[in-house]
Image (cartoon, rainbow, N blue to C red):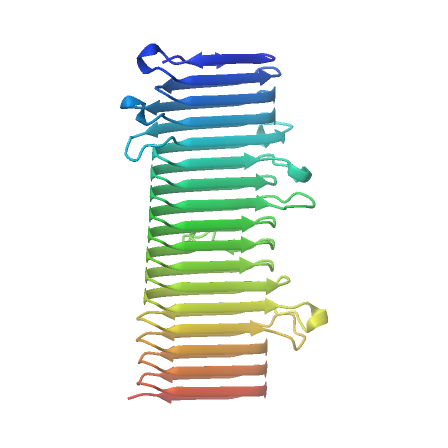
Length: 428
């Protein structure tokens, strides 16, 4: 093994590993002052580092064992700007054997060490791929970003693209054929700042994709099992999927098989928590409008349960605002479905305060809640089987409570006006 540390201007170096591990290749090209590249390879690896600027640093360590493990690892690092840093560590444990591949491309012009891009990729196993790109497209910049990834197992894929400032992405995958894609920043316009994404996936064929465009967004995803799917889109500002400051920091937690969660927050100051433990559980949360301060909490266990939440905060010109809406859904059992829609198109006050709560256990139950106005409350509890509940409230300060515990119960509450109260109790 041959190890190189290169500094200086316009350096082109070719490194071939020691004969005992033959066919390792390293190509380093640096332009500027005080650049540093460290490459360590063992057996049939390939590394290419190209740095242009000042004080860039790249460290690559690769190792393959056993007849060079079907032609080893590949790592490419390309950095342009100043104070960039990249570290790649790969290991090939042979099963399945195709080359691991890490590509890191960072472009930035940080004015200080605090504005450096940092990328770290570590892979153990075979067939894993990591791609990290940070910087400038359309001058959305890319300073002070940090991306940390880790993969163990086979055929896992991670893609990180950060086109903003002060973004952080932490992605970890273990198992087989897991995929995580992330994009943080605006595709056009001025830069956004302070976005955080944490993703941990364990198992087989789990899928996570996250897009955060607005500033100060936070998302945390944990998936354990097989074929779980998480889709996140946050074009708004100051939205959280999970609580970055609280004990329950994970926003989407899925344990089991074939669970799916989709969260879209285009409004501002929203908070979402989704916890699904079981199989074939599905959750959709959409929070739109302006600064609606909406809260959505979904807790599902069992199998084949579905929850849909839509909370819209229109502008005053469209009847809003609709601040402070809350939707809570708890479902256990099987084949239960909850559908909640809340808004305010009736004008003042500035805080609508609508509340919808659904608690369903048993099997085959269905609940639908539609509320338009402010200070409306709907509470549904169904513990039997094949029960249906429909609540529609239009106006202000209305209240509806439904409790059904039998088989095939049906409740329909429709209230228009202000200060109406309805209570339904059915069952055996």
